Length: 219
Ligand code: ADP
Ligand code: ADP
Ligand code: ZN
Image (tube, rainbow, N blue to C red):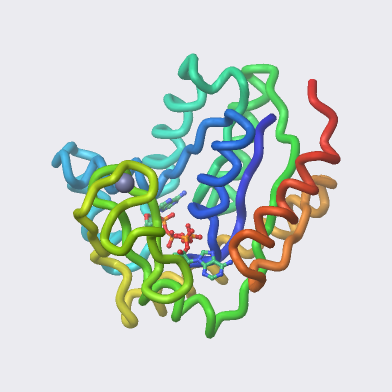
């Protein structure tokens, strides 16, 4: 099963992708995570992307398309993947169609997480991650079961993203509305769009997503 999680920054794409990978054995492909790794490693892609990401802009299409083209042909993707944060422009969506077609793969669903703008700002400013495994938490909405200890890997080190601040959030939201929101219409027209209420508590959103997946016939 191949899925896209679509939604503005902070909508809960990473959180839901993590929940589904657990139950469905799919691979989570987050271009944001891949780019952050490249920045950390100081690769040429990382050097190009770092400043753009910190300002809240979008990394050039060619760069992310190349990353995804390499990644979805990897052997661990044969059973399916969840794209989290890609595509983000119509050009990326068109490139994905070509990539999937070349590999005789199809897109099963595009799941849109619908969340109010005011909630997005709150979610992003309260977001923090496990420094070791990347599991995502929130100051009030989603804390580890044992305070200060990652549920997934037991680490006690946590980090916040450099771009999770009020000023950058506005740029990221603008980039979303300008470049990414048109994908909602693009996938609706293709009959792929499913929308869930992303304002619901995390577990309820997961249930809605699971309901959609249950309706997709397995190959
Ligand atoms: P995205 O990947 O779309 O940017 P995340 O999954 O990282 O979003 O979620 C952003 C923040 O909001 C995280 O701190 C996460 O714990 C929190 N969050 C995610 N889903 C919900 C929800 N349904 N209700 C409340 N908080 C949520
Ligand atoms: P969020 O969780 O806020 O949705 P991501 O982790 O997906 O953010 O992405 C962080 C940043 O990485 C984006 O603001 C953008 O600069 C860059 N980025 C990630 N994916 C893409 C993409 N598909 N196209 C262009 N830029 C991207
Ligand atoms: Zn962890």
